[in-house]
Image 1 (cartoon, rainbow, N blue to C red):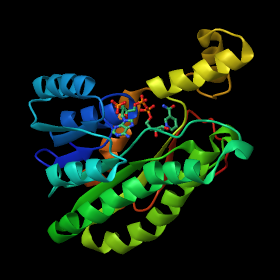
Image 2 (image 1 turned 135 degrees about the vertical axis):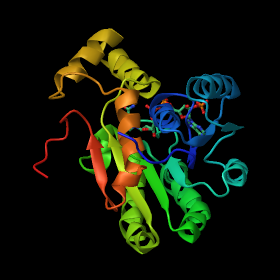
Image 3 (image 1 turned 90 degrees about the vertical axis):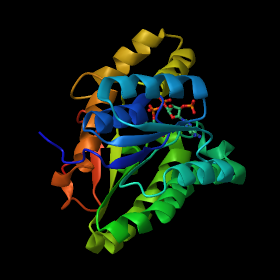
Length: 259
Ligand code: NAP
């Protein structure tokens, strides 16, 4: 299917690995020029070079922490006039409700709620002026059903979800859509880190921890970054203009919900 976004320009935050990279690659494959970002320059430059050579698109890179004010200014400057925004950042660490202090919440809110909001505030006006734009926020299945050990993530991402619910209705009259993609478990470094924690806690190997978790998913496997990216690119396509303010679960059926 032609996604109709050849020549559009997209910012994909936190995109040298994992789900962000999946989104960047699918958008590049559809012919979009990119601004890519991550803290580590090495992996970022390597992936940008790979995508340029595979898809012949123009790619700018900005190596910085997207959750810092300075990093946000640098990325926003590079991304002026983008048609597509994909927000993403690392997730907060797991833990126990009784251990989290105010600073832990401030850090999580900054990274997973206020950072995507800052990018939307900066880049939505340009999209609205053009009468066309697409925003996809990478959040988590934890906004539909909480993951107890990820209370910092549950709290921050649910705040972002509430913000998007209202804001998406305010920008939709200008041809701009905002939607959230909610990953369940995908095979990325983040999943390895979480499985590593479970393995250490239970005294099992990481492969055993992974197999145990896969067995709890109706699809009996982890998702791939390519599947995730393809869904993101569709939400950013010309065909998805009537999808507004939605929260789309990509979890292999793991979240047990009727709707
Ligand atoms: P990942 O494989 O660890 O990749 C994270 C990417 O983001 C890397 O490119 C990393 O590069 C970059 N990054 C992290 N923090 C950053 C920051 N502050 N500024 C700029 N770039 C940053 O993670 P993932 O699995 O793709 O997860 C992406 C998001 O989805 C996370 O918020 C995660 O919590 C959420 N999620 C993931 C899953 C899953 O199963 N994978 C499930 C639910 C939710 P650098 O380290 O070089 O900065």
